[in-house]
Amino acid sequence: MGFANWEIVIGLETHAQLNTASKIFSGASTAFGAAPNTQACAVDIALPGVLPVLNRGAVERAIRFGLAVGGKIAPRSIFARKNYFYPDLPKGYQISQFELPVVSGGGLAIRVSSGDTASEKYVHLTRAHLEEDAGKSLHEDFHGKSGIDLNRAGTPLLEIVSEPDMRSAEEAVAYAKALHALVRWIDICDGNMQEGSFRCDANVSVRRKGSDVLGTRREIKNLNSFRFLQQAIDYEARWQIETLEDGGRIHQATVLFDPATGQTRAMRSKEEAHDYRYFPDPDLLPLEIPAAWIEKVKAGMPELPEAMKARFERDCGLSAYDAGTLTASRETAAFFEKTLALAGAANAKACANWIMGELAARLNREEKDIAEAPVNPSQLAGLVARIADGTISGKIAKEVFDALWNGQGKDADSVIEAKGLRQISDTGALEKIIDEVLAANPKSVEEFRAGKEKAFNALVGQAMKATRGKGNPQQVNELLRKKLGA
Image (cartoon, rainbow, N blue to C red; front, top):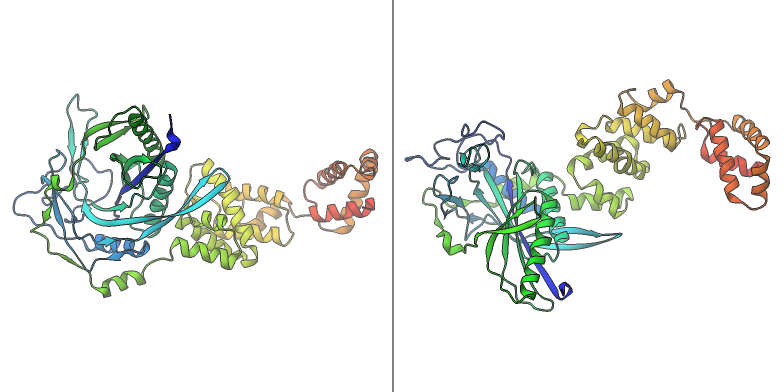
């Protein structure tokens, strides 16, 4: 099968549920997990005589997103009715935006890793528009019937539409992860994919390499994990290529991904815009966003991850990889900055290493977020400082970290004193121990003098063992070489 002769073209439509306390056009709560149909008011279920009122907080979050991606905030945008029938859409239409979205243009820089190499790419955005979510159709526990839960109906969404700039499932996942991190960073969406707060639709088509004509696309709906996104695109692209190679045709369709089989299956023929009969919602005035409002939102924006990454590289001397890892989430970046402020700029690399290494490993192992870390920035800064001033070695530091993690001390100093872990840096004491080690290991001494460097490492190990790991490693090395005349 000549897959190498084909190019995959991918665009994503991402629905980010905005983290407002109330719905986009009503005062009903958006809290997740309530009993079915207890958070749907008269507006949400379209009772006669009610009118929608736009949630200002939802608009501000859309403005925040537009600023973060360098998009154009429309001074005037319009809400439209998207007409279609579905059991969990009580109005018979969805209030969305069509011709005049709140945000247009902009883009996102992504980093795509492949083995030991990584490449950067810029994914352009077409638009981002505000709309309301539908309810949920529940098919389990109803014995062949479906239940309708309208709690989610009217929850504010920001639909973010990318250009078809991605050429592999890996690029699509990198983009989705970058977008997910950004909406959490600017605090417009909690990003909880299990609860449906962040979900993607992938538009996938294929074409012969060298062609500039787009193939017929199929849209994979409601992908709520990065793993499913990758698997769905990989399968769909392979299926389309095989179909075309076998002489078949691709028909535009909406498809679903089945995680159990790892396959996509057609749900319905894909609708075009005219099928929805969009028209301006007569119950909502055009949305006017004056420049002063945009400036006010801009003033409250946090430093963006790309700017912070550049600052970490410039001011802290971190590599692009380290800076990128630390700015992957706002919480991790804040933890690093708090630790660094206490440990001092000279210890930036050490702080980064501990956060990306030991701390991250423990959090992953125990499935905790960094906000739940038992070791706080103050404790970690104290630990880094004691390594830097020679009080403890890097090896002993891991023992101190363990104790802090398990609540066995309030800070590094108290653990070091309680456990007697202070590093031996007294030259006289170390010389005495080294003399004893050399006397007890004449064979290793002879082998080293015969040119075997491994013998020296064995002597270092014996010396560190004699100090119960508390000898200053650098001093032990220097004194050993001096005694051996190396």
